[in-house]
Image (cartoon, rainbow, N blue to C red; front, side):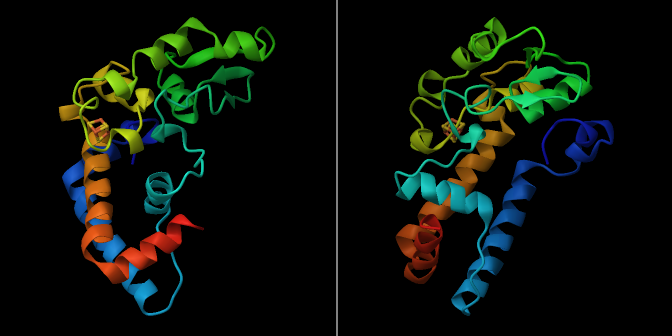
Length: 198
Ligand code: SF4
């Protein structure tokens, strides 16, 4: 669950934290791996995305796992009223009154003016993980992402404070889990490797 829209309005977002989420993730992944080991082909999508990112040179097209961030550069969201956003999460923030990721309007702005808008350039330039504190010497950096919308929503800053970031905690947890399986569990590693080729 992400900190936007109804998840905030209904206070659902506060109902579980990254530690609980990781417990759920590990339990779910274990269950899915067991299904595969019994011969049922089934994959966990976020794990598959990360595996493809880590083990292959195939692009994954997932804007939250990029630095420079993929908002605007990898996707633009056109709202029903003509407003254009850097991402769907940026659109959800605007519904809550925060227009930080609203780039323009379909009538007034062409593609060039949208992707070169000061708002987009500033958010992307301010969130690079390659030079962010904590990220720049993190072993996972080359497989991680910047996710400036999440960090703006939770910390009021596109870079965020990574030691306090739920995104960072989940990324570290998921990637550690995957790499541990790849290193130490040959049967599970074979299943994970097969997902990366899907
Ligand atoms: S896991 Fe955390 S510290 Fe490491 S690159 Fe990702 S966000 Fe940065």
